[in-house]
Image (cartoon, helix red, strand yellow):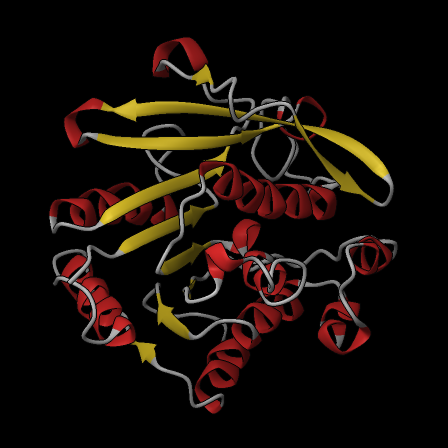
Length: 273
């Protein structure tokens, strides 16, 4: 029996950013999943409001130096890492000066949605998968948290579908109440097509909004988790009509155990519990 490997890809993780429901879950869930005997890797973007000195971030030179090409433009990929000592947990950060140097996460000081969030989500999703390739680490579960991570399932089922590192991974997307009302730029679709994603995979994404993004994540996932007490009703209905496994919402005292039992069900009998 082998030890299961779980990749957590999150929009944000405490204590590197202010507390949010997503940040709280992906601070505690990976730690306790590791303590249950699983091997983990955990990722988030390196937003510019993260104090690198205070949090002891440092660049991983052997992993940095790659480029992520978005619409024929090379964008340097920088990988940083930091530890949460009390948790004995390491976090990898996806960084790029153009996309993540600004001192805010997803909106500016006036609450305006960043115009290039469409490019940022492409860069982050592909940056995580390219880093995993460099690590030569084959996850059994890929756990997605937040819309900034929600293109990962699509890329796994298209651009990275022939990579043997990901061949047997079960993709589990957690659905939160993290809606946004804005739309991505029209040229976003062309950038996805540039990565070889065919039109049939872009049926929803042509709407360039939150619902189309998350419906596409659902379509390319193996299972879902309801991560908030209430989520967008249309999104919840869409998830349920797929017939795929769904873990219902669990409160703070219950969710870690519930997630790991759900992982066990998805993995079957070939792994240590």
